[in-house]
Length: 590
Image 1 (tube, rainbow, N blue to C red):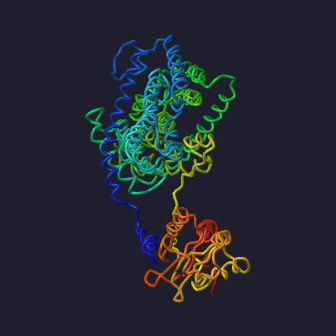
Image 2 (image 1 turned 90 degrees about the horizontal axis):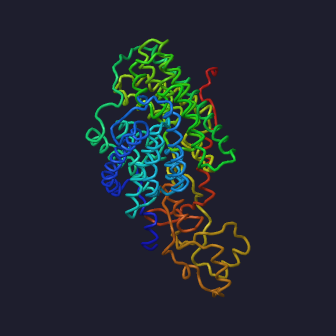
């Protein structure tokens, strides 16, 4: 056995995690990405304020402004149309990737685009979103900043020699930093990365995300704001009843998220049937936005002021109900038309509004039930229950309400997964022909070792066998495509396959030469009984050999062989664990 062949198995060491020093390098790079994501969030907020002031007040200012302060009817009718037409032109002649929520596009880039985002998208996405939101589009800034922050992380990563997985870690780091900078929710941003964006739970990606989010958390008070985004004062009651009521409200939120998601994509189907280029669809959607603004101007824009009023309990239930209906209609129509904007802020308004309405009839402050509704709608709509529960608590600073937000998030999540095959985010990706599974489970190939799947005591060929005898063997009684060739003591010499026999026939090899003199184990991949089956699968992929000999560490004797068919046993083990049901305790037995 040569050193090279032995190293094919020695190179893999067993451990709970796969982290190495490159994780430290990525964490250091995340310092830069976190700062870039924070600056991107600051720039986006300034762009939104600039667009709002320019469209509604005719002034060049980057100071925050509310659309509700400009009630002129002519502006309500014209400004959304101008903004949507501008966004349509930017998408048509700039980049089509700026259309939509932002988060689905980030997910698709991560899973199917090797985490590569372009500079054009990094520039056009925040500009188009600022125009859309500033002109009255009923969207939030979170989707665009996740896309923009992700683009900053991706572009920075592309400047270095990194793998797609490492680029993903920095892309998501930028997205998490941007979300933290906008909302001041570092814990929820980390959990959103885990539940929605990373599609893995590894130190390699988790540590850089935490670093970037903490950088954003430290920089946010200087650039944007300090403290919770919606710091409101109310008392959270204790006891079992509020928890039960929160869980019940969560069930309602799960149903609401299913209705909203279904309506959104049905409206999108209607837009696709129009005999018009998609560039004009946002203009049609803006008509609904303008009409909705005439009914309730508070429904225009991101609606952060309305969220604050609902959480403080200063909105009567009639006003909240009107906002709920108008916001839902204009948001669904505008988003389905393909304009640029996020889903989180509208979902918070719609969930918070329904919770606030219920809060006028439930015990406790109405603002508290609005907060619980926000946790539920985020969990049900985005399929991020832990993120939703913590996000609502961080937004308001009421961490003592976590049992209630967790109950609502779990209830909404349970209803959502039962009623909808996909979330409001992944449905858009599925309509592009992509399939995504948002469930984490143990990889049985990593869990099971070679000894548990291999065929023990496999058939072998002696090294003393001659080439002529081997050719006769493969022409007659051979039942496998390849066989280990061993010494008299059972030590591996190499692997003989049918293709080797065919090559010898073509080349006219001497039939009297022994196999031991012909075979070389210099490049023969091997594994040990305690090697993870996933490592063996990787050997098969790299070498193209479908049967890997399993040898003892000390004696180098062949104790088994692991084939592609054997690897499928891991899948069967997982299926049996999921579907095989039995009862071990028989209470009637004597």
